[in-house]
Image (cartoon, rainbow, N blue to C red; front, side, top):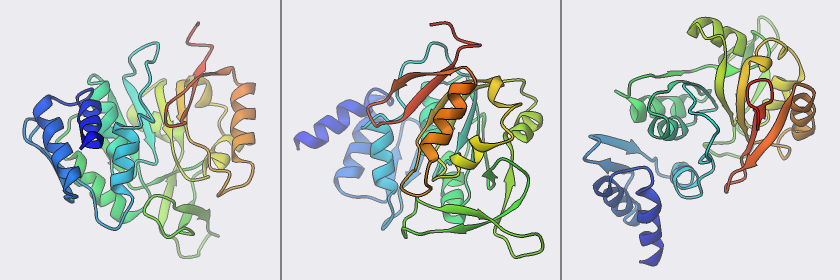
Length: 252
């Protein structure tokens, strides 16, 4: 009982008290759907996945909830899973435009349902990578949120196309990125190894989870590149997400 009262209290940070009550009720009785009657929305949390754990990480453990020095309006969600982070950002930053990217088919399909009808959110089934290429998906941990991508040779069978951040900027007609959230299961090493020279200086803040357990030296490559490109650590959230800011844009 006490645990669910704590859940309810946390949820009222983001939702009206009626929707917070219904979400708490659905979680308590392990429903696969969270009903939000005031927002007129249903959030799908699939059984036998880590969807419920992901929801709790975002809305209870607050892995993305920190007070930024400005309100971001241009957000990239790299590794959007079932759309919960994008949903969180849209609630916290209602003036934002969010473009989200997810590689796994079932996650992508669920995110489309979870984000349906929310203005200024687009979801794409592509992998953010450091170059235009074709990729295959591996699931070494047999989980719904721990996929690894590997480049395939030209002419070989592939499962997903990549997209670069430079391409995203061009397609969205953005000259900068306010917030880049990255949770891409080790592919962050590739992203920060090369071909970042154009988009990284245009990025104001980065929220990132690194995955050394999956790809060796991820953290080292990410930290080295950020340090060499005028980024400093802003904070670490309660859930352990690292938040960096670009000194070019933000003077603290």
